[in-house]
Length: 81
Image (cartoon, rainbow, N blue to C red):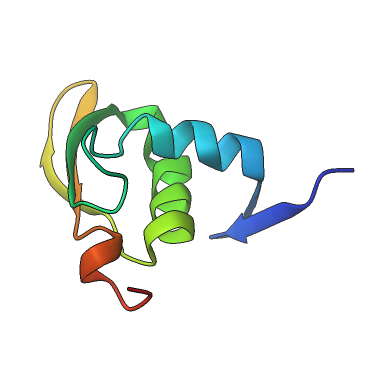
């Protein structure tokens, strides 16, 4: 059984978090701030992944019909840096 990480009552595997983070991380460096669009359905796992990898919180900046504009300070601006 793979080790899991729990966020807001949901459990995720490391592989799930890695996939979700890779979808939103800055292409130049994973520790940089995050500023991107995601499908609404991905918000919960994206929040978990960003916290897991950067120790910073996701902010929803804009809500569209099917997607959300999100941002996060990134690892370098967080408490773990």
